[in-house]
Length: 160
Length: 160
Image 1 (cartoon, each protein chain N blue to C red):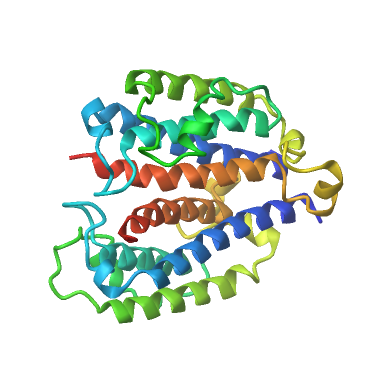
Image 2: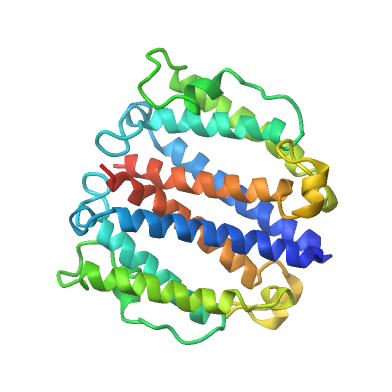
């Protein structure tokens, strides 16, 4: 295996590991538990679930793979704090969207070749990437893996 | 910049970013806040701080860099759950150890050459690494970066 393929495998495995652990955790949490705040006065589980769906959905366009599936979630779960919108999507719907968006994303992720991972994403020009080659698509994946770990740690607090 | 150096920069930047964000968060939290549970019935801030110090300290030997600085923390903060030990080190001491262990670790991390990152760590033999080359030192760094993100998300709940 070439060194660039090894690194891509490491980053994709790390993403898949966090994704699998989060899906397992969400399966364990009831809808009632997801309605609770992860700590008094902090975000509710349902908000964090919607937030993760919206951020992963945005990766589809950020990684130049395709348009978002659910662009309506971004203003509600990323650009607004929890409790600002009274009429959130149901937890059942967000659970389905969580599965659908990650399946769509991973369909693309598993097909990208190593050299494509080192290409540009939507928020950087080819000129800037030439100067700062680490600001590539794979770096987005690393960053979103950390983001997922961060919120998974919070969602885990809802387990009784 | 060679492609292997680009990966290493991405992984090390990601580690340093999480470390800086966690140190900033710890500076913001008072000792009183760190004595609180991150959510009712869950780990206290002081335990998570000790846990991160112990896990980062263990990285010194796992990455084959040197012996641990504070091996006495591992049984208390990794092999035991919170509230099992009545006499924990003081928060002042753990704060100093957090800084010291990360400085020691980063002194080594910043000197490792790209090819050294793709070498073995203490928990894998040279034979197994030849078969599974992604199980290298850099993979440990990716994994510990996710671990740090996970617990940083929990510590952030202590901010009022």
